[in-house]
Length: 65
Image (cartoon, rainbow, N blue to C red; front, side, top):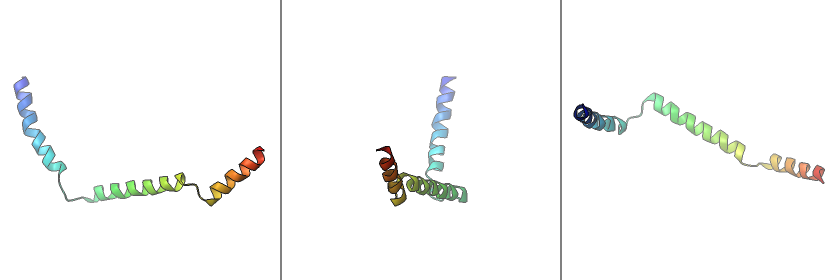
């Protein structure tokens, strides 16, 4: 039983590696990458403090005194 499992793994594993190493990107993968980049840019927009954020913090600090 164990021998059949090991032989099956030995046969299937190289085939899976060959598929994972494919250089051609399909439309779904390109769309996924575009979504990832869009998500990163949205996240960057919310992380950086712009002038309005800094002004708001200054106003908060003035009222806290």
